[in-house]
Length: 69
Image (cartoon, rainbow, N blue to C red; front, side, top):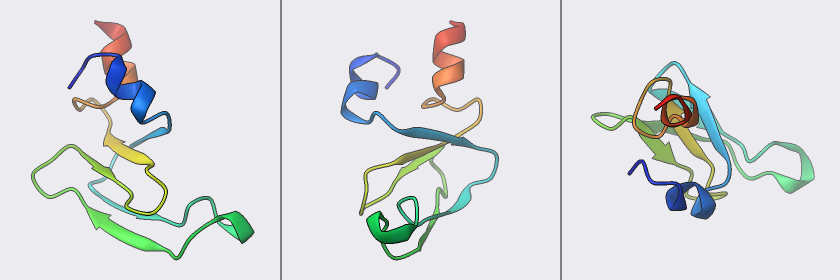
């Protein structure tokens, strides 16, 4: 999914360099319990609590890669 409408539905994309990530929603009182995700065969993962998207650098959901096209 490289069309721009995808980014409207998922406004917070965090580019990472490793397929294993942890999300706590930003921590503090507004966060959520820390959860770990493994992208496995995908190049992105969406947090089930806060909808943040973690995208591998250079992958299909990397905003920098899409902008460079």
